[in-house]
Image (cartoon, rainbow, N blue to C red):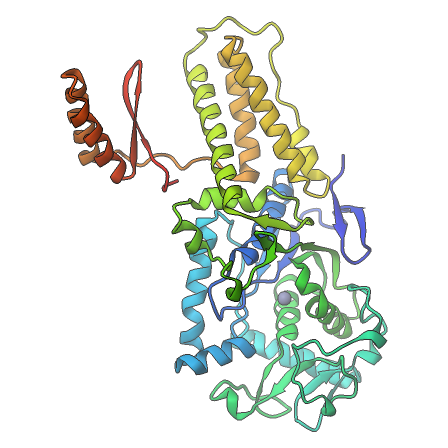
Amino acid sequence: MALRFFNTFSREIEEFEPGDISGRPIRMYTCGPTVYSRAHIGNFRAYIFEDLLQRHLELRGYKVYRVMNITDVEDKTIRGAREAGVPLQKFTEQFKGAFFEDADTLRIKRADEYPAATDQRYIDRMIEMISALVSKGLAYQADDKSVYFRINKFPDYGKLAHFDLTQLQSTGRVKHDEYDKEHIGDFALWKAWDEADGDVKWHSPWGPGRPGWHIECSAMSTALLGDQIDIHCGGVDNIFPHHEAEIAQSEGVTGKKFVRYWLHCAHLLVDGQKMAKSLGNFYTVPDVLAKDYTGRELRYALVRVHYRVPLNFTWEGMNEARESLGRIDEWLARLRQIGKSGNAERPTPNPQCPTTAFEEALDDDLNISAALGFLFESIRQTNRAMDQKEMDAASASAWLDWWNRINAVLDLEAAVDAAIPEEVEQFAQQRENARREKNWKRSDELRERISALGWQVRDTKDGPKLTRGAGST
Ligand SMILES: [Zn+2]
């Protein structure tokens, strides 16, 4: 089955046509964070969806070249820097660092490029694009000295969002003194400097100022990926006005179709409500880790729902994620043991053969629920076969190979346990001695001390086994 995606532009599931990509990677652009505060788990839901998409394309043999921008200048960053009393760059730097830290915690693959909007190269490109739009009559400088896109001159404006222009209301992304603009929906390409901007300004043919948010993405995407992009992603809240504006600007300059496939990720809710600081249900990645969950568990909780379905984040869901990962871990440990054991078991009458159902589910518009359903059904069946001693070493190895293949997409395997610290080993030895002496009190105390160090001791028929406890990957 060919790859199929829901294209927001057509509102239809479309077969993914690689087009002329033979010999070149798929060009993918994903709108990145605005670095004015730490990104929340709703932002990361979208980034994890994009990660899943990239990894699945790669599993299917495509090369992907992905660009994710960093928005380090717009209204919120300027306001934040002013309130903190620090230069803009210093203010945004901390949140850039936090973004990469959280992305690593969630095992999100790094993009090939992370262009920053304040990079002079891209500022120059923005100015160049705005000049081109002005000379084509698609943009104009208003009395407030800002430059606006003239949406009435771009007949396709509204097509992505399926919006009727006459219904347009102010979007909140533009300055509110609407009198300067010809149409309420005209959006700023260049914002003239005003006092509140402090020393945040660049020179331009229209006077000092700064770029609008939308032109940043048009400039960085076309500068790094060329005039035409294969896949452009973002959250549903980016569709309008941001992506609509990106199309108008980019196509207004190049005259070519800007994006072939638009993919958008649905919202994340917390306990069934929109996440908001005022509701006390606003979480960042460190907030979740502080409750003793791991990045791997959060990754699972955020990836397991189809990207076009709103995801309801709950702590119960986090516990389910922990349980599901525990099942995977145990299953892998059993398979490895059989795989290592040579051929102690009698061979299966019908060797089990992993199928390609997992990948095929993902081919179908990244149907992760079906793919995970297949994974857990496979785990159930193979566990039963292992219970009945009907799994030979070759079959176990085949399942492990299959897991490695799908884990390239999921990236959900437990990190290899770090070496056991000497202190933990010593406590375990002392506990073993206490057990031999039937000193249960002492044995329990030592178990507690081991646990306090982040380790767990399990008594097996081969003696005590140390594993990393909850709270670590
Ligand atoms: Zn963008």
